[in-house]
Image (tube, rainbow, N blue to C red; front, side, top):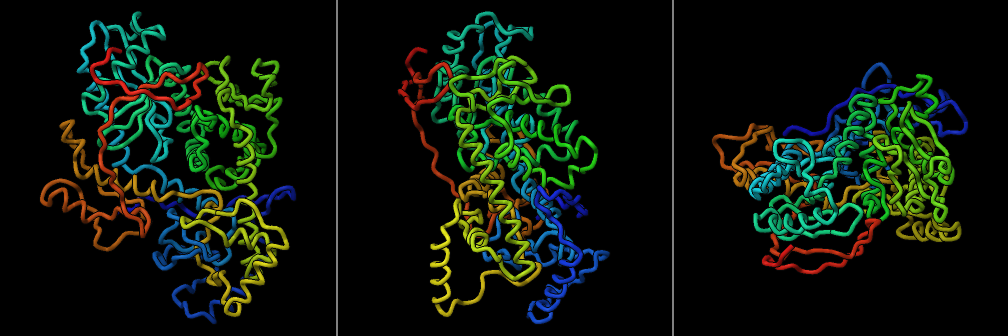
Length: 575
């Protein structure tokens, strides 16, 4: 079975020289001591298969022992993006910046949608367009256009599809005059919601009519993919163009990786929805671009971005979690990037001066993050992420040198995680509590063996201290790929598509061979041959399809804050 992860060439990462930053490389004296300790461990262990030469001139293929390890070096579960792999990096004592850079690449490869997942989204858009065509509006041509993360290809597997319906005058690219007012748009949203349900596009939908931008929120019936539909919102299409320009032309090898990692970080903490005070994809992209523009070593040409993705991700959390002046500065990415004064720009909210301000490059009078009223919590979370991932690095460095972390706090953080491998320790217990826990562990069966693996090639994950992939997400992805090969949506649309089978697993069973779809075996036989367990020990969940009425919401204020009130509308009600 083809593996979705792409193998990148291992390179020597640029080392930090300033004492103000974490030094991610070892001194030559440390390396000699560690090589002697590693040699002793290797010679005395029974894992002869893990013996490798530490000569830098000879590549130690860190994936040679794929499928051997079930635990990381600290006894914690291997995260999905490293499943089936040994420790990343070259030789026995790889540079830590190289390891974390490689892990960021592995994570992005894992979290990126497969061709099947992307094609299902394309078909959802096609199905929406067919519903619009069947409405047969007089002198109006409705066109479904996507923007946001789908258009820029920087979306997570669980992200919704941001779509706008452009109501053009027939034979023109100008918006029809009869649909330029908010009241006309609201009436059309009610009509469209009813039509979507009648056409079988969805089982229920919710119209948020009195938001700043009125929208329909729904889920496509077959795939379960969330869809947000607005009317004549061409500004979203323009912002998508800006994001694509930065990600494909200016920073083609780095911006997407940084943005995806940050989006997953916020999504798993429910901080990614603007209407709940979170930060959207557009704002995340602009913040990442601004950091890259203002980075002193990038400005001087002294840093190779693709070789330092991990370091740049850490510095993103440090900048916006600990250093950035939210009260006075406004971020601008125009003219090679600069910081503006919020008061002079007119973005200062005197009642909430702590809010983040980001100038919209498409409309310089628009503050992209003015609706991110939860920025205080986001800022604290960014700062916490910097601390957690820094502690994970220090813990591994001390373990490599002394056998386990010398600091009790680091030991606690390194050995406490959830089932998916993400850190469960948001705070460190007091010294008294740590001492009591340590004594309790030693008294239990004589203390037992250390949880830290002395195998120098045991997997190491720094990102799992801040990132995780929920089992429900894994099951949802597996279900979507399964639905693809069942062909339900293809039959509805009368289309065919036959890509190669892909998997998010770094390694696959021997019987899961790569094949081209079509001809011979039935669809169900092909499904049975596939491995839908995106991580081991998880099973796809296929909830039954529900048939509920259309839901309409009028309980939203002009600022777009959703308050959750809904009323049921029967099919025969007027819009």
